[in-house]
Structures are given as structure tokens and as C-alpha cells.
Amino acid sequence: MRLFLFDVDGTLLNARGAGRRAFGCALEAVYGTAGPVDRYDWRGRTDPQIAFDLMRAAGLTDGEIAARLDTFFDTYAGELERLLGDGARVEVMPGAGEVVRRLGAREDALVGLLTGNIERGARAKLRSTGLLPWFRVGAYGSDDADRRRLPAVACARARALTGREFPFDRVTIIGDTPLDVDCARACGARAVVVATGHHSGAELAACAPDLLFADLADVDRVLGALTHT
Picture 1 (cartoon, rainbow, N blue to C red):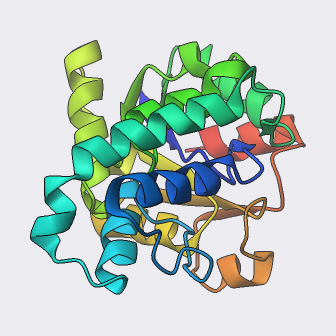
Picture 2: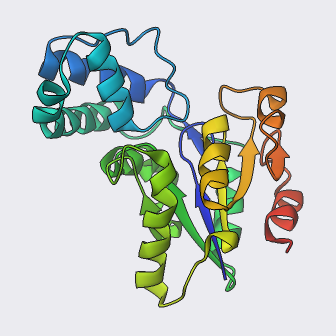
């Protein structure tokens, strides 16, 4: 059995800026400043890393940031849920839903999430898509600020769920940034990227992923490549 771990933003869906807006509002509410939020490169980073980077840039100490981090994430998640509302602004990427559903229906595959979003944020973004039940395990920014440590979290949860071992060479990480490739390379997983986020195909190709797709719209071709061993 192979474990397939999907990133959320840019890979599965586009929330049309709701996450960034909610993040900035929550930073202002809890810390009194959003820091250099409009100049920050969000791509592929975990929510805790983003919060620390922005607040350090605003002059706060790590102790000051950590002391209010739980309150910040509660505020952020509530604002995100408010902004997303019925989910009408959430766009599922071409083919992504069908790829997830068809992988999830296979007996030789376990489908999960590996995302920098905190768990509540990831669930808020995915709730309206109908895809949440297909993700049987997950590793989130709320588990660790270091994305490289999340594959081990996902594998441990997959083992607890199924009773099977998932060595990293049986894990496929699917994302849309160079940091997703880095995450896979750091643990020996298979690296798959899709150019539906904010990196071009050329930028992603330069990272030498195992597979690169412009998008997931050709579902049969994508599934054939993902499941080929």
C-alpha cells in the first residue's frame, strides 16, 4: 500500500485570498500588527512559521509571539471560517477532486493531507469541497512548524489507522512549491508537483521532482503516473 499526501492551497484548491486576509486580521487583533504581511512570501510555508516570521519582522520576541500563539490561531480559524462562509469562494483545482476520489477508492492506496495549514484551517478550506472524508490521515502546520517533520507525523498516523508500516519510499508527497519537493527529498519520499499554484512549471522543474504536471485535469494520465511502480 502507498500513502499519498496532498498539500491544500494551490494543489487542491484556491481559497481566493481568504487565508491571507484572515491571517492578517488575526495578527492585528492579537498582536496589534500584521507585520510586513503584504511583502511576505507565503508559498509552501507552515502557518506557525509564517506567524513567527511576520511578528519577528515587526519587532516581537519569540517569547512574546509564543505566549499568544494559541489565541492567534483560534482567532485566525474563526475569521477564516467566517470569510469562507458557505464555501462559494473556494475553487477546486482542475481534476483534483476526481484524482483524490479515485485514489481513495483503491485498495492499494491511502490518501491523506500534508499541509502547512493548521488542522482547523485546512478543514475550513476543504469543508465545502466534499473531499474531506477521503483524507483519512493528515499532518498539519499545527503539528510542527518545520514542514520536513510532517511526513513522519503522517506515517505514524497512517500506521495507527491501518496497522501497516509506511516506509518513506512508499510515500508520495503532492504539492505546488519547491518546498514540497524539499519536504519529500528530506525524507526519501516521492516528490510530485503541480503548477497550479504560484510557481511556474519552469521553476518547479528546476527542483527536479519525480513528476511534474501542469494541472491534474487529465485524471487518467495523472493516476497512471501516480500509481505506476
